[in-house]
Length: 125
Image (cartoon, rainbow, N blue to C red; front, side, top):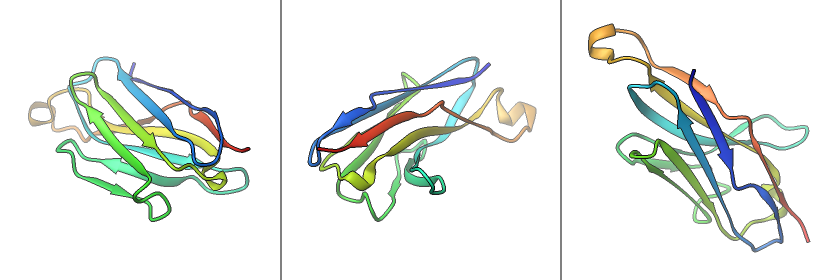
């Protein structure tokens, strides 16, 4: 069974920083794209940042220049460094990963995707 486990959330004052981590565990062959999403109360889940297996990144306009996504492929872990946090960044943050259980060249199977359980980030004075 593949699991995504997030950590690093918490309460921080405006202007502060947090670093989120998401480790993927289980019997997987490889991981494609990884990303961070967030969902604030009463709002839809939205993409915050994403990173491909090759390291290409994209960000939501609202976090561009403040957040940085990175990944360590040796640890199957994705990170989100969040700086200059604002109250509007308050949300539950979820990581997502697309992965192959077996070698797609042999199995022909499409990638699967899974979500973490979420970690609360609260920005408040």
